[in-house]
Amino acid sequence: MKKVWLIGSTSKVGKELLKLLDITQIELLETDVEEVDITDLSDVYRYVRLNRPEIIINCSNAKESFDTETIYKVNAVAAKNISLAAHDIDAKLIHLSSCEVFGNDKNTPYTEFDIPNPNTIYGQSKLAGEQYVRDFKSKYIIIRRGLTYGSFIQDVIDACNEGRPITAPTNEYVQPTSPKELAKLIVDVMYSKDYGIYHAANSGAPSKYEIAVEIAKILKSKSKIEKTETVQGSYKILNNFMLESIKGYKIPSWKDGLKEYLKK
Image 1: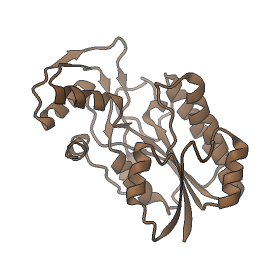
Image 2 (image 1 turned 90 degrees about the vertical axis):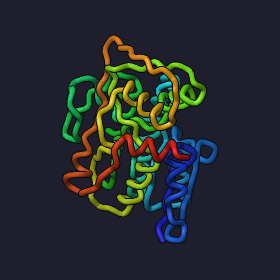
Image 3 (image 1 turned 120 degrees about the horizontal axis):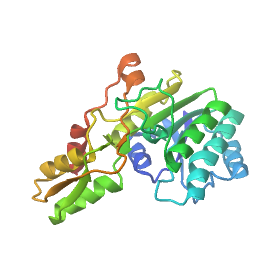
């Protein structure tokens, strides 16, 4: 029975993993900030040497709304610490990254072969975390995810339920990505030796305006959806090339993902 250490068990993806992981087949070690300070290398070494997990799943994430120091500590420094500790005990590492490692260099979906060029502090921190994983580990899987159901999606849902008007940009393109689908993928690749970087997002390339319209439609809301444009716009769309073309793994469309999520 393999030991699996789940870091960030209270995150959206972490919570979905707790539902999917078969605890009759693995010994699950779940932690959050209270149990292990992943920004402290000595604490991470202490934990892994005491428990010796064979698989480490890192779902930790400091969002864009956090202060800069915290963003870099959690997304970059902690990734370095976890990678070093995983190498020390020869554990496999599954590390969640983000579409934000890309900037606005293209207007077509980014594959795993495109060169990251982040244009935000958050994106820079996630890319630094990726680099640490690649530098210090050979047995790793990095999963770059689309926009998981966070503040934008929740704000639209709340406005629809309350009948308030919604303003959303037509020139910001993102992929609403289901935490449940990400958890399914992690479980699928947990024992794989096909190491490397994978893009994982619900398929499609909607604008935030189109996403708001779709949410209102699913919820049968009468909220007025108003168009706007941001100064620069953004295009953070991933092409799941390695998953689909190499592994034959398909993730449902963003519309199907939202429908399932909003049925809850």
